[in-house]
Length: 416
Image 1 (cartoon, rainbow, N blue to C red):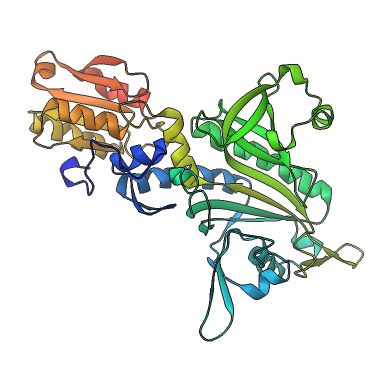
Image 2 (tube, rainbow, N blue to C red):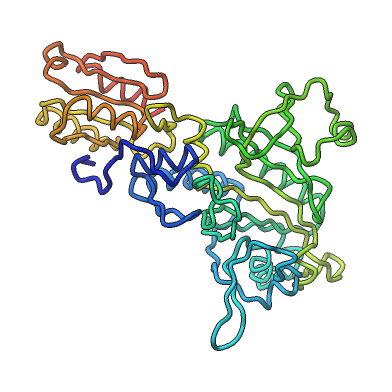
């Protein structure tokens, strides 16, 4: 893409009404636009990055054999009253409204109820099980604290997957596979070494749920981590009894700040019983389906990657999710740069070329702010020496690659 045609422009100053690092940088770099507290529009670069995060999540969910659907955000009060989750004293973050024609509606903050009803139309026998269904969809929560940028929004994107089983053993088997899928997601996002399975309270569903917490200095959660075992415990359930059950030594636990990027729950029959999701077992007896729930926040991950990787100069994206793989900087050599741009794009390389009539300093500053993994400079000085100057945005290291060796460098570095 030509940078001169990019829809949004960068800013030099932080927005005055933001305190979160992720919001400040993403707005300055032109990735998002703030509509109101806790609600952000995605601009072209932000949308490209988020779509790549979604693609990784979607790929791992599909490998589990899950079916993707899209449910409505509008929810009827009648359905949620059956599970006792409509009243404000049960769930206090609903966005609700009353229709003039009668009836109440809410904007869905999660989707256990509607997916249970949908599943009841397809599940009748044990032969229909197990089954898993997921969506990547906008959720709405009336957050009292909307000061963490896109990491805690009132409108945000969530991947929620639900599994349906005939017995606990089947749920346990899928649950373990889902845990591995989540590990794969975070590894592919470049945060696998910073993200840990964290034991947390299971609420009314089970003794424990499992969170995926990423170490981050600005995180809202406190976890206690055993790095050797790669297991953590959320502060909310951290006590001697829990440590004993998990076989953890308190003297080896490290207190750190973290951000919850995913969680998984064993729901049991919490929703299938009140909503009539039943199946006939091998003896012909009707039994409630056993369920599991598995969530990841893609838009939260967009903010987290900013918090974890960005530096004083700007964003730093892992190659797997960057809006572009190469940022081509033309310094008064537009013909040569455009020729290289055409060659790279024809090979399927995602390239942003800075063809604007600006100083080298301005172009370099914008390149650092945008955070594309590799910056390739095409200049008269470099071409006279038969080479391109390449900067690794993550390490800050600069290298000089001979022009004739550049295709091999691309194959080795970009197509890993």
